Image 1 (cartoon, rainbow, N blue to C red):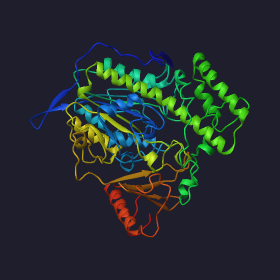
Image 2: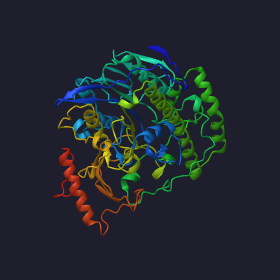
Image 3: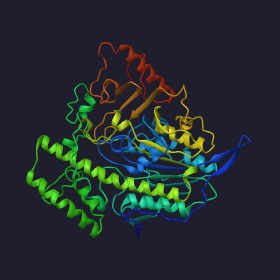
Image 4: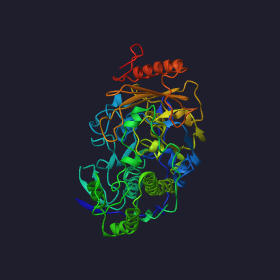
Amino acid sequence: MRMFQSGLFCSLTGVVAASTLASCASQKKNGEEQKQYNIVYIMTDDHTQQMMSCYDQRYVETPNLDRIAADGVRFTNSFVANSLSGPSRACMITGKHSCANKFYDNTTCVFDASQQTFPKLLQQAGYETAVVGKWHLESLPTGFNYWEIVPGQGDYYNPDFITQNNDTIQKHGYVTNLITDDAIDWMENGRDKDKPFCILIHHKAIHRNWLADTCNLALYEDKTFPLPDNFFDDYEGRSAAAAQEMSIAKDMDMIYDLKMLRPDKQSRLKSLYEKYIGRMDEAQRAAWDKFYGPIIDDFYKKNPQGKELANWKFQRYMRDYMKTLKSLDDNVGRVLDYLKEKNLLDNTLVVYTSDQGFYMGEHGWFDKRFMYEESMRTPLVMHLPKDFKAKGEISEMVQNIDYAPTFLQLAGVEVPEDIQGESLLPLLKGEHPQDWRKALYYHFYEYPAEHSVKRHYGVRTEQYKLIHFYNDIDVWELYDLKADPTEMHNIYGQPGTEDVTQELKAELAELQELYNDPVRFSPDRDKE
């Protein structure tokens, strides 16, 4: 294993100042010139709308992410098809639901690398393609001129990277900085600048267990966050929600998640935490222990219990999450600055999103998986090439299966008929198609597994959400999202809901048939 020294540890200033001509090729399509814009797709892990200030100003400031929205568009109804890291990435890269791309969950699946993906189709159209950072699809990337990925979830400190020649190298530094270094280096030195390019910058951040860069450890310690109104949810009428194991109060690990490591204390995930921080060099570990040492001593001295302990855990969780997010936001700023200095912005679509949403104490939870709003929703902002007219908010319902056809159409590539998503290009041109989708389909498969979230599928419309939990359970849930936006009251089976339930079940059956999901609901039998 080789160790490489990062040129950036926590510095976030400047990029090479020399200007180059913007990459923007053209091709002939039906006898007309078709521009092929560059695509910079930045995706994080477990970033949620609540923790991005252009969506929600209660908790955190994300000035660089907000730059994208301020200069372009912000999707206010952006969703995923399966709120889990690997499956979400498979949906994104294929433009298909999990039932079509066959990557259902993180525990049993390996992505079929031979199948059609949008980077392969872009390559065929003359694009230079690259992916750096988190891949998390078990098989190695295909369809890329260049790739360098972290194994599995990756590590925050001094992480390993798998290179194209199947060599595993270790780099010195913090993972968010290193991934950005690699991305900028490829854009500057690694690509053919006579061709348009598409780069996927996939960050490990802001995934559990939220290990911040040492230069950010002291941030936000003066902040106290209000508990969400439903933090102490009792899950009445929601048996699947009651069965989960992702409670901040009960399931968040004191050592692994909250860093309260002491030799005489044990936890289920202690050894894994020790492995992660064991990757630190002497200086990094010294800074880590200097910060956390007094917090650890104070915690065990005060020994909070009950609701006081739950609130303490929530505060530490929020601060650690925000510190990890801070580095991500700064590094997005580095990419934007590079594109601006190289005169690339006018000809480049810049996309920022996450592989799914995340719970920041809503329902008392962390993690994702459920079809409920906080995890099904995801941030989505875009800087548009100068030829596009949209600006501000886009309210149409979009899903991560839509990214692939959007990028293909942007490149002038015919979208294959088997792609299930819809191109967002009309929306980016400022149009509001009357026939835009009115309902979204969702399906989560990973059970039994970590966090014990039951398998379920469902349909979401502008006002309603219908969910069916199945497998070892047979439970329906119905929510009126206008009357009950926090999804606290399951109204399935209540008098007066018969018509809307029947309509939603019909819509659900239609979507399952459209997407050819083999696990489907039959309205005739009203059961699996």
